[in-house]
Length: 284
Image (cartoon, rainbow, N blue to C red; front, side, top):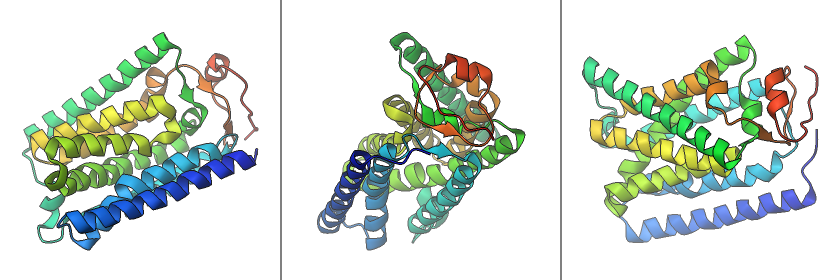
């Protein structure tokens, strides 16, 4: 495994320190200029500034890192469960689960909204893939390395997809949009939450951040128009399952920037042949 260079470590530390300063500033600002209770001040600051900053700081550290997908998947599931649980707890104070958009829908509207959002999400992925091919853009190697290769990995990735649908939607749509809307307005909250959601996926590179931000916007619009978070949860999970498990080759941009190795099985030969640049691969 390639250890991060001194420059990469220094950059990660600088971004982390900046994130801590920014988080503190947002805490002070929200405490002074809004009527948000302390738990909302803390969680909004973490979601908007601290977590995206840590995501950015992680990028230089994972260059050249060998990935064992299973622990990454399982660790992500735990993180998403905790994140969703915190959002649910904070947003439910005084209003119950409706405070994070958990409002029941009848079967037909639920199915229609969920399928519609999933279709829109897949269209976003397909549109970015076509644009990237024309422009010569590539996925990051870490994103390609995280795509499941074995049946066992696909099964766990399916669990991760559900966890992402629930945890990320509770945190960045159901909770964050409703928490900051009184401060910046509904449209402002939608734009802000979508931007932050994109930065949270910094490991996917600039292409992935733009793609994920737009995806967050689509899910956010669905949440606000339907009046319930359930369609966004289901639609998000469906997109992750389809794009990550069932049709990964269809939605991944061909080729990836080198720098991340596989240590659980080999990537398929056609992935290797179409990848630009060299990639370290360790037999599994």
